[in-house]
Length: 112
Length: 114
Image (cartoon, rainbow over all chains, first blue to last red; front, top):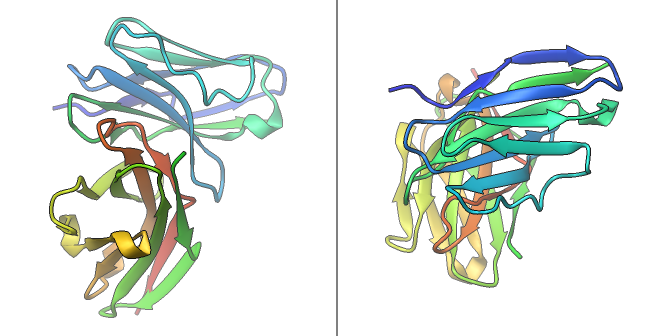
């Protein structure tokens, strides 16, 4: 079956522009996560969606970051007024009940 | 709060040698512990997980890890390294009962030389 799909795989944008990153989770997975991975660093939790519950936004670094998820399907992570420090790989992961996380291949964002 | 510390950001071993990647955790409640591997330009793949059953956990590709509560450790080992093992390895911890919300370590890059 299909895994977690993220698009685009690479995104280069100018400082100050807005970007949208997309994640298609595995069908039937109720939980969806966004992580950020800066060069040479670990994974930084951003946001967590679980079914119809209110999302856990505790990891979002600033109000320039937001994410939405429609039901138990696609999620988009939006970064407004991008800054150079936003450059990173953004990883999406999904999981079903009592199952481990399955990760996508990530979107590499470069802000110039 | 929970955290993991991975000792050594880079580890280099010869092909055929023992692989030992260190992970220590901090948790106020019994943890679930995980090792993930990330190959270049790919997402993370689960290698193995500890969820309070057997303390010695066997994973894919010949890797295993042992949960040692007294040492708060969950080190990853493989008896004989292969060139294909070269990758980034991440240790992660979560609370029991919330197995999916993970806190990751900073990763260890494993290099395998001839």
